[in-house]
Image (cartoon, rainbow, N blue to C red):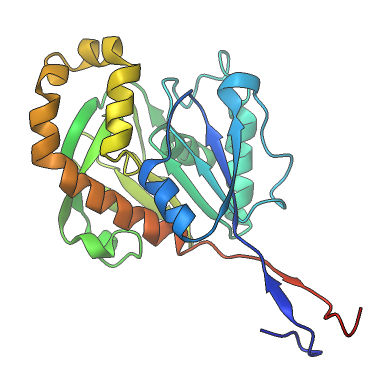
Length: 258
């Protein structure tokens, strides 16, 4: 590709900022899709130091992962208000944004919706229904009318004004939404493939035993029954979102012109 004056462009790798709200969250299927696309990932481990990107110019896309806190826990997690503003700035600039679980709740807050705490507990593999809008949307169009995916949440949110609901479940009406071209929130953990679930099982057994009694003992059976389908759906969703990231092209002078 060349510019209007005949100079070549260099297509740089897409640059993706990942906000980790809790240690050992894991990118799973999303890591695979980003790696396939040759993306450069920059991690911001705000659970450790509260440091966020200074502005939106250094990245083509933003991912906000899950965590044990709520989207309203500003007092215990003082970086949250700035993260809310950051997600909105990325979205308003037309850049691809992805909020997963807590990330979707933060995204909903950024666009003026309400967060509802502790009223929508789901854990483990669940069936999610795809809305008519979702079946026509790039993110979920390959999945048909429903799919199996991993859930781990107790909070939910109202749909932001102007957002399109893409997926739903009996427990949480707003399982996925889109704002504009490529701002997406998913309440479910599509990134949580079998490897990530195994990691969470090892890292957080006490928490899982408390919120889902008996699940640890049934995990092997459940994984055989549902893990493969969830892995396939998660990777399809990850690839679909990554395909929506728009890279900035950097004009390079040719050696002859240098």
